[in-house]
Structure formats: structure tokens, C-alpha cells
Image 1 (tube, rainbow, N blue to C red):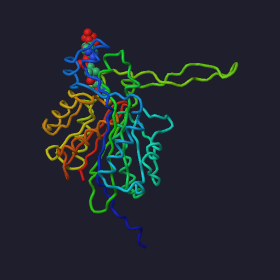
Image 2 (tube, helix red, strand yellow; image 1 turned 180 degrees about the vertical axis):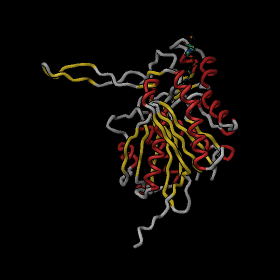
Image 3 (cartoon, rainbow, N blue to C red; image 1 turned 120 degrees about the horizontal axis):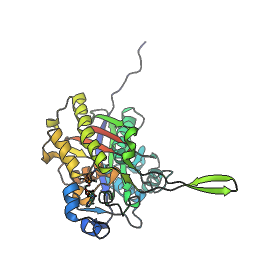
Length: 335
Ligand code: COA
């Protein structure tokens, strides 16, 4: 007896979008708050300024705006979207912000949920969505990365506050049977090293009535061991990308663009050197936005697509890394 015929389903990249708040915080302005300088921040990180959300620009709003522009590039009818995944660590609503974005878009036929994996979040969400498409469950998916870390940064800690900014980016991806532009991926976590970067809950003992206590909710600001995170990134990111190149039989020479999570220009340069990828192929917009966590990869991709750098059929190696610790890589072809 014949079994069920398996149809190979691939993924096609149809659209991108991004959004950043208007308010700009330059290095110069940060030096009015903590003991630092434009020169120090630029030379150690490559960052010159970042965007900071003020009233209205929460993760739901930013994610919605990025998603809307991605949908319009894809030229999709809103009703045809099946899946919306929002990668964020700073939702407007801890119960999940993706359904609010779904409602604002009017994507009535989609299921929407949040996914948290810090700065690896967008990559993990893209991999998750692609598996739903390849598995045949859904046809059209929106993958959004949005974060508002400015609300959780300790603005008195010069070792970390200089790095982060707010923003959102989104990609629109579609199941297709003719080809597969989602070439391969890999992902990893290591909770043993999780203490290097945290945004931990802060619970205070309180009582409901006499003799019945509870822990009130809240969060402490971001805690980071910068040197350890740096060492982790420059070691693990080249390793996971190299493994992926071998697995997919694509050499680092064949890629058109390297789109890394935008954490620090020195990390980008070091990964490029280790993989022998020319600087011209390493995309960076750190100077303007700093580290926007789950938003950096789609924000960078959208900018490069709109500037006509990333073109149809370009091969992109991408890697996200950060708290967890978590890291991952994907090889895709645009279009
Ligand atoms: N301005 C001026 N001086 C600063 C400073 C600042 N903003 N931040 C730290 N310093 C000082 C330190 O106090 C230290 O001084 P000391 O030697 O007198 O004690 C000196 O600069 C060196 O500090 P160090 O922490 O060794 O600096 P660094 O070269 O490692 O750079 C980071 C710090 C944070 C830029 C770097 O470690 C980094 O980018 N790490 C990765 C972080 C990251 O990407 N996190 C997100 C991952 S998703």
C-alpha cells in the first residue's frame, strides 16, 4: 500500500519593514548623565546614538508599524495572514503583545503569540515560523522583532546603558512549493552561563491578609557582565555559522551579506575576521541605533533592502545571540 505523498514545502521572503522612535539619545547627551564620552563609546562599541521610546512608542505600537510596512511590501491581503510571531523581551503586556498587534492590523484569520529569547529572539521566531510553513500548517507568516530596553536599563550604569536602544523590524514570509529560500539553521542555548546577562524579576514579600504572604511583581534593571558576553559572542557566533556553512555545503565566500545581531562593532568585525568574510559584506547600523535586542536583525535587513543593498536572490548569513545565553544562525536567500 502506498503511503501519503510528501510534498516539499519551501519558504519565500516577501517583505520587510521597520520602525524606530523619533527621540534620539546621542553619546554626547548620555555623557551628561553618566561618566563617559562620545570617544569612549564610539571606539569600544561603534555606537553614536540610539532611539528611545517616549509616550506611545511601546512594543505593540512599534511592532505594529514595522509589520504594516512589511505587509505592504509583500502586497498581502491582511485576511490571508495565518501566523504572527512577536519576538520581544519587553512586551507592552506580559500576557503577550502579539494579539494586540494582530487586532491593530485587522489580521482576523491569524494566530498571534509572543516568543522570548532576548537578542536571539528574532532569529528563533523566524526559525519557528519557517517550520510552521515547511510543515504545511500555515501559508503566510509575519515575524516581528521589537524591544523597548530603555525601560529596563539602569541609566546610572555606564557599563551597560550606553549599548541599548529601542525599535522594531518585521519580515513577511510565505510557504511555496517551487523553491526553498530558507536554506538552513542552527540554534543553541546554555543556561549555565545565563547569569552573564539578565533582566531578572524583583519580588518583594507582601501580605494579602494576616499570615498569607505573596511576592509582588516587578523587574530589576538589566545586569550584564560585558566582558563575558563579549567573549561568548566572538567565540560561539563564528562556530555556529561555520557549522551551518558545512551543513548546507555553502562556503563563506558564497554569501553576499552577513547580518549579525547588532551588539558591538568589535563583535561584528571579529566574527567577520574569524570567518574570513570581507568587511564590505558585513552590514551594520549600530552607529545609529545601538543594540535594539530582538529588533536588530530585521531592522538591519529592512534598511539594506530599501537601500538596494540586499537584492533578489542574495544569500544572507544571519546570527542572533545574547541572554539565555542563547544563539543561533540561519542561511537564507532573499526573495
Ligand atoms: N565610559 C567610560 N568608561 C567606561 C564605560 C563607559 N561607558 N564603561 C566601562 N568603562 C570603564 C570601566 O569602568 C573600566 O575602567 P577601569 O579599568 O578603570 O575599571 C574600563 O572602562 C574597561 O571596562 P571593560 O568592561 O573592560 O570595557 P570593555 O572594553 O569590555 O567594553 C563593553 C565594555 C560593555 C562595551 C564590552 O564589554 C561589550 O560590548 N560587551 C558585550 C556586551 C553586549 O554586547 N551585550 C549585549 C549582548 S546581546
